[in-house]
Length: 188
Ligand code: HEM
Image (tube, rainbow, N blue to C red):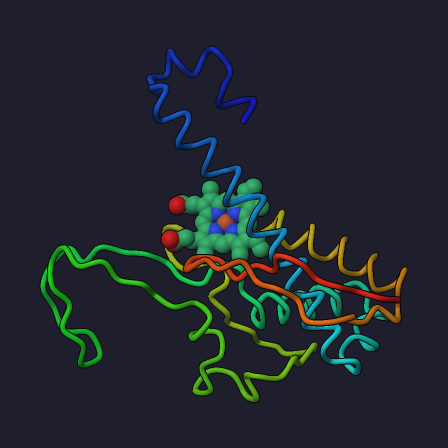
């Protein structure tokens, strides 16, 4: 954001509204999603004590693989939004120009034609072709950073508090776009 806001960018031709758009994209895409993942993954591991115990001792490639599974199991962005540019049929569904389409990431990540036992946390699941960071041209710019943050934070949290448990039901933010805990009562 500092680079975007540097004076030279005005010479490159970014208007103020474009700068605002880019900064708010980075802020919400970069912060909210990762914060949601840390919360949702914590809830998921607390609800599955075997997975929680196994997760606590993972490191290196095994930890990378486990974080990938938590990303699949609790995707923070519920959907990708697209606009249909021309009439066509897709898998038997009529798509008409101008319609808005919600591509549901949560459903794709639990597709039993792709994932065995999709509703279970399988910490060594590999391959794991989840769509949590999107797909194609607009694949998440910050995926590497989000993975790093999740790895560092979740492993530190569960190593420091190996008996972390839910102390009541979490509450969830009522939004159509994010899967995001509002509060997580915990005890250790
Ligand atoms: C767990 C954390 C994250 C999740 C689940 C996530 C998810 C996504 C998804 C699904 C998309 C594709 C949207 C689409 O195709 O319509 C996307 C794009 C994007 N993400 Fe992330 N993201 C995360 C973290 C981050 C971070 C840390 C940053 C930046 C620091 C970031 C920046 C962006 C940007 C700039 C785009 C737009 C890319 C483009 O349109 O070419 N994201 N993200």
